[in-house]
Length: 344
Image (tube, rainbow, N blue to C red):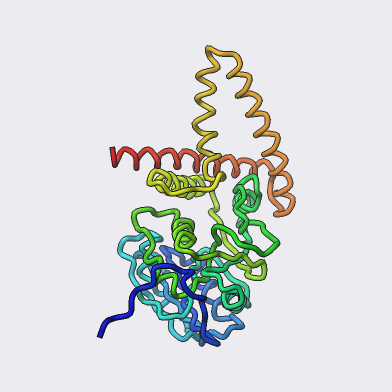
């Protein structure tokens, strides 16, 4: 008997769900004892009913209490399973988690997060209502400490993150990516595994492949979650350098990107280039001064407004924005150069 052919497109037929689908939630983590219990508590409190949810925690070899906290958690879920992620990177953890998942739809959630009590229900309802391949909602960034609040403010500002609508959107619509997306099971069958050769662009890269396969992504403001960002500028720079390197690698491989992905690298490369050129050519010097003035004026104004909304220090908020831009831009150029050199 011939096995049924594997689907190759997400738009071949309508994406339907059973009346009450089993929801798989995959959580990649490493040394998250500070956050993992609160996240599990928020999932246990879902009004969808925890018996309709299975939780798979893909751990990269935590050396703190994370694994014991998961093992000892009094699970109300249909299943709570701890799986190993020997490669210790996020994308590999997602793949290990999905291999263990049995749900009709699946949700990725970062361990540095919490979700509202109606998060799963709103996600499933939006998935069924829209027929999209993936749905998600805006993410509220909650900072801890003075620097953490500044980082949260920077990550919630269009000046800080560009047109990444999931950071601040208030209207529903189709988008190019969402955080903590709820995916129809068919997405895994069509798009396949996450690309483990590029860590740091896990959801963005996967969602680009989803769209190429004919799927659509819907952002619904009713789907709400919270994210706890890094608490130091050093950790923020490391995070955004990794994000940038992943995007630069994808660009070198021919992956189309959004304009927001190029702006930081243009700043990082263009600034020094204009400075060098300006030593011999006055117009370049004048252009650099004008661009710097625009950046500091626009950034200062955006930082002030974002800081007011988050109870943060405006100067630290601007510093966080600049850290994100420089680290991302440098990482992008590094990733692009390294990938090009690998294939030279």
